Length: 459
Image (cartoon, rainbow, N blue to C red; front, side, top):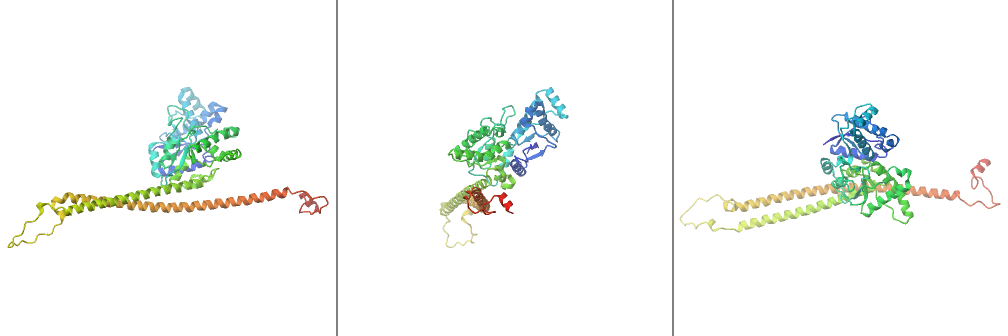
């Protein structure tokens, strides 16, 4: 499997922590090697270029120049879509002309030739060898999980000679999640913009864009959304609660669609825990839904194995019946050539050694057919035993997952009860703060209906 130089990006240990954790979990299990670029710096993304175009290019180029000096000059993988685009633009800028290259080398004070390619993590995972490794490591396929693959507006754009997927209807993430048992839905907002950083400057516009993404995903039957960009993930995961409040105020149903990095879903199919993948630190609750999806996947797989077990049993019975019928026909067959001549009364012969019906050459074909049927029966029986063992193992895993889900629900109920108690206490406190003033002439008791200043004055 190919080795890469790894550019983490500034979000790796902050807003994109779930992406980092789930990526490490998955890559460790499939032998996907990434070596972090030493002494890397912020890529500058779009902000640096708005200040100074050359500065923006130089920030990204410095990382690529360091990677170029690593052993084998490996290609660079950048999980963040913004970093991926910034690094790609810097490489393209340097390769456009000698003047550009010399100017960048002057700024970063080191040579850079633009040899190594820049790829996104999604592109690297879309490699056939990697996809097959992901599929082989999926111990708990997410069977029946309907997911809307959201690529965002950056990862497949702009279109150029190094584009790895279609800019309007990309399929690489769909194929990856299909490999771990999920069912990607066909929807229209795969590459629509989520507003990016404008969600801070213009939240009203951002809310409308994000609402449309969720609306289309829900309309096409999606139970969750998968992303490949930390900023897209942040906008969808963090803003959905605000959008739901607005929808309820307008008399609309709120969305109940958690958002995951595609690596989190792959990691879950490999058996990763919430704390290993980062699904326990989302804004919108994501852990419990994914556990339920895993349980459903195990149940479907268990049902399919049970059906395979039943089919194997029926096939074994059929093979046994065929073998028995062939044996019965062989026993009934008595060719004339085999009939022994009548013995003469005076002739005494030494008794011949006993022979079985199938030792006679004319029955060799029937004997081979019987043995073949017996072997087929034994093979089907072995398949049946293997299916039973797999079903038993799945039942155990299902029970363990159910216990864990019950514990999670119990903690959630306890937390909700505590929050309700806190809300009730707050309500009582508010009522006390808004008590009607005592009528004139009523007895004034310090510490009961007096102000804090009055109480202090009495003391």
